[in-house]
Structures are given as C-alpha cells and as structure tokens.
Length: 79
Image (spheres, helix red, strand yellow):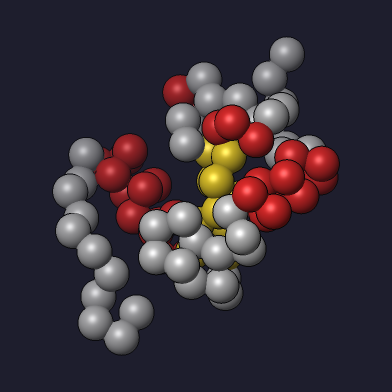
C-alpha cells in the first residue's frame, strides 16, 4: 500500500542524488523532501524516483500550483 511517510533510506538516497540542494535553484537551506507527483494524486514515496529536494520557496510554489493552477515564473529578488 501507499505510505505518506518518506522512508529514511529514500531520503538519504535523494539527498545524495540531489547533492543536498534544491533541484530548482541550488539553495542549501530550508530544504523539503517533495514528491514530484503529490501523494494526493497517487504519488508514491517508497523509492527515490518520485522524491526530490526543494527549498521552502519552490515547495510552496509547487503546492500553490497544484491547488490553484497558478503559474509562477521564479523566485523573488533576494529570495
């Protein structure tokens, strides 16, 4: 069955693969493990294939896009 929790082994694999940085902007702080296909839409987290590292900004943007269909171009200045 599907599990919402991302297993530690998967997190470690994703961290190594993504170099401990946001895959969108390269930020190394305020990182989140994010499912490429959200859990609510059937996205799994038992392997690293559907998980990526995102900074807080891009994690928020992705959530808003899925919730509202928003189109966001990039990070704000200084962000």
